[in-house]
Each structure stands twice: as structure tokens, then as C-alpha cells.
Image (cartoon, rainbow, N blue to C red; front, side, top):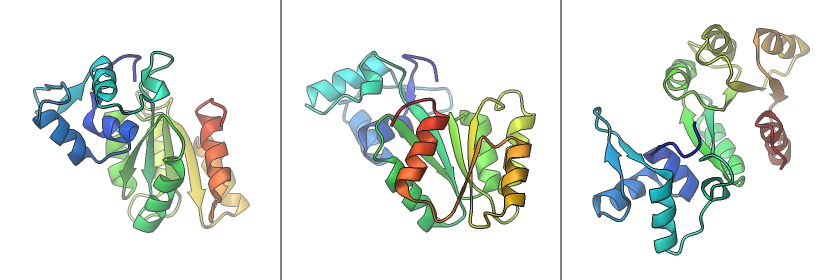
Length: 194
């Protein structure tokens, strides 16, 4: 995402720690200035979001105050809703992350191609399209090749670790994962300190 570029409603929701429905309400009520793409999707300029937050006496995330770009986008991929919720809860404690979810490998590939996240936190064992297939597809596409990938597995054998890294995953963690361990890995992959 380019510095100062427009934000999606999902990105604004992540930065403000609210739901997308809340962001839609702000826009519909005229509280938050937005424009619509030809496809009917809202986009919000960073400067307009900062103005809105200041008017509402809400904190302005560091990623919007001109020091850096509008936030690192992280796609969480797991077929288990409970695991997705846990990952979201742990990573939402870190400022500046815009979290998105995919319930399986096929959905993940579509979202990665469309949104090009900075990082994908990916479960290894999923039906239909497993984590290995997702890594292979991401690395074979020049447009998504730069995306960082953290693979998680409940089957943390050395063979699975080696295969994931050989296919192009940047890191591999065994489940169950402790919150600090996950945050350390995410910060490392995004090139930032905790």
C-alpha cells in the first residue's frame, strides 16, 4: 500500500478497531468523507480519516500521522473459526495492523491476488487447498511473490517445516502458538520491532 493512498472500509475498520458496519455508518451519516469506485466500493483518503478522528477526539494511529504508511495488511487464513478468532485477538494488540480473514486456501488465494497483503499467516492443513498449495501459488505469481508468509501447523514435523520453507514460506511455527511468539514472528517478518 502506498504512503497516503486511499484506504478501504476494512482497512479503516482495522485501524480504528471498529466493525466495517460502523465505518459504513460514519460515511452514510456524512461524518467521514469517502468516494466510491466504479465498482461501488468506498475509499477513504488518509487525510480525511485523520481529520475525522481528530474531530471525534479519537486517537490517530501512528501509521496515519505522517510517520509511515497507512498500516501493514495481514491476511489470517485458517479453516477453524476459533483459531482465526485467536489469531485476530492476539494480533489486534499490535498497533498499525489491518487484519483480514480467509476461511480456506481458495479464498486466501483470491484475497492475496486482489489485495496483495504484506503478510499472510497461513494454516498448513486445510481441506481442498492446503497451505503448501497457497504458498506455491503466491510464489509463482510475480504480483504476489513479495508477500511474506508465516505458516502455522498442528503437524510440526521437521518434514513439514522443511517443505514449507522450500516452497517459499518465510517462517514456520508449530501450534499451539503462544501470543508473544506469534507477535515476535509477525514483527520480524514485517521488519519492525515489537
